[in-house]
Length: 380
Image (cartoon, rainbow, N blue to C red; front, top):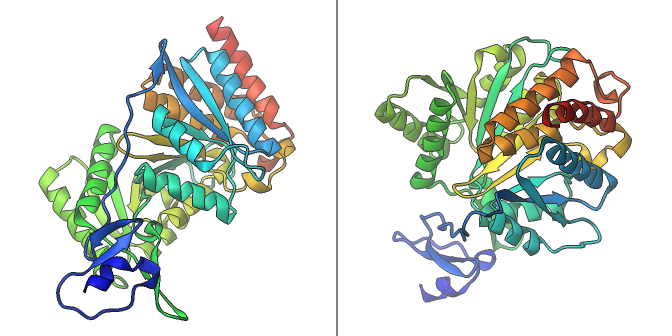
């Protein structure tokens, strides 16, 4: 048994013991039946001279620089008490990933502008999610008049498990040529997830929660989610409806009848798929933003999944503006968030200013300038 404590996970051999064994993960010994505990370094909130300090992560590409300029210009004109600490990560690595992690630890809030989808960028994002325990992903999508949504009055909030299960990266090779992946479910983290879901829905006056699962295919893991979710719903007795729905049926109904959904929650296994389909039904990912939240830290970013292959001349800034709105709501600056959202909708709907992605001929700079010009009238 002693040799099991010394070998790393990727060299661990399959052992058939009836009692619990221990494995080593990132330098610590844990019971095999337990999820490794999450150690999060929490620093005091950063608010200096009445200003919130927020980390602004940009890539070295023109899109990253342009997106950062959009954000700084909006906040300067709106006179919002937010200052940015700009960290640039890109192919030339002008800053190391640890510098970004430490910056978010200090400031507790970050806006991530330039989304890249290469393996190195995904590795950095997983590092951030795991080290800061950003266990909730929040995406709100809604129909906007004139922006490719076939269904009016769609308003869906997706709450997805963000850093457990598949994102734990627990895998090893018991013998050469065979790799096993551990997708560990832990009751206390599932309860924390559903506690957030139910209280988020109640605080934001939602009426219905739908949980997507595959209990027939995964009776132990997804079955545990279903059991805990129903049990907590009965204990809390919230004034809202809670239903379980197989993931294939959930996806089909999002496409054919999205109006019947209010809050959709699901595990890490299906969350990205559900969010992508819901945003596509409502017009496209470029229109929306996402938030990754933990108990003490939050990262805001556009939901746009094509920033890395979009040139700066065709960049749609709608998701970037909505990420700023999400940040303001999180900081408690609700009046500023409301004004910025109203001006965004005025630009998109009333003035019909669209980028080429949505059938218009306007540039991203023109969209931002139109919002900024009206903000100046209200702040000067």
